[in-house]
Image (cartoon, rainbow, N blue to C red; front, side):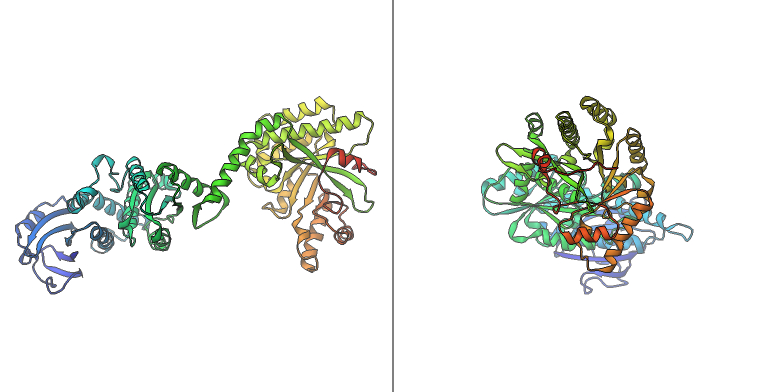
Length: 576
């Protein structure tokens, strides 16, 4: 590729060389004496309303393309001789760099009274104007130098970026997969909060960002060995030979693009990768999988590159099977109530229990709670399972009471999403009435982080529950995001000290003082406190010395089926 980039004044005198051979083009040289067709420059000069012109010049060394940007007092001129797609990619990056420089340095549009945001918006408008007016002609230049078998039909091409549209991209990828010549990486790049950029700064600004992103992508080394597409408004997809590890180059180059992009908010992107091996799915399905990996990475708070691999594939299949079996599991009573005792530390007597859900699958055996509870919460199934556990707990209490056996209050878990169910209060009333259970025998445990978001709404719901006689327990207190003032202001009867306090080093005096402070705080707020996760006699003794009267943990008993729990319930006392 041969290219000469320079600035001319309004008289076509070359004032500054930006790139190229100074032997050919020298400052103060008249451009009209350099090119073979100076009359074309006169035509440009006469067209005052057009800020960008493209001319084909026939020089002795071969045909050149001249791209001329007209500024207030100067011309920015590109003389380029391009013979391949790779050369065009290299030129595109150079073109964007120098037009950005010129927009900032050659236009005298900004006055002192303009605010900084107005300057930036004007710059974006200039960039967008230049891109829109030259995009079609630049693409035409590319089509002229490409091989015939690389030509993209107009209907397959995204007008804004010049990349493939989704359907054409998927078809090309599938053809390569069927040929089976090499292994590929399917790479997806997604722009975060792109809708916000469109809404705040306008669709034109969003289009400029997409165009600049496309030019950035094809300017990365080895980009010419892959194929590109824009498969949705803010999502780009690339198929690259795996040996290039193109996703690493992309990750390394991105900071230079996003950190300098002229927007008040930082452009943020996510990258997902799928390694296409011998067992190749359809290209569209692969892209969907990569986008799913991106969504999972955003949910879990991970950063960097999200990989869709066999492990993730198996996890998604397993989760889909779990969700598909929830309704049948409820009908078949596969969800069971396990009870863990709450104990008076001083006397060792059981004063209550916590009802925990266990899923006993007839084929797979017990499914660990961590494998299904977060999934149920995420997918909106947890309310159905929670209602089932509430009802099963009341059934157990009624059965024990009617048989003349002693019972103790049992706490059940209420997920944050349950608080937003419209029939929550009616459903709890129905269950209590059906089994003739007093509300003070059914405590409601709400995890601490549920109090943080929509705290006013949560306050209203908990107040209504408390008015019905339910005791409210704040679970996992001390390790979440709630503040002491929030705990003091919420309608809460019991604080459950998070088990992680006891996992930490109890030899650390400052750590001990934190626990002592929380215990003292509960007393000042007239709340009961229960320490979770007690596993040793030493921990129990220390808690008692600090004033914590109640505990729960493996030292006193693991979660047990109802029959086993009540069989070992020799001594008990009801909570006062």
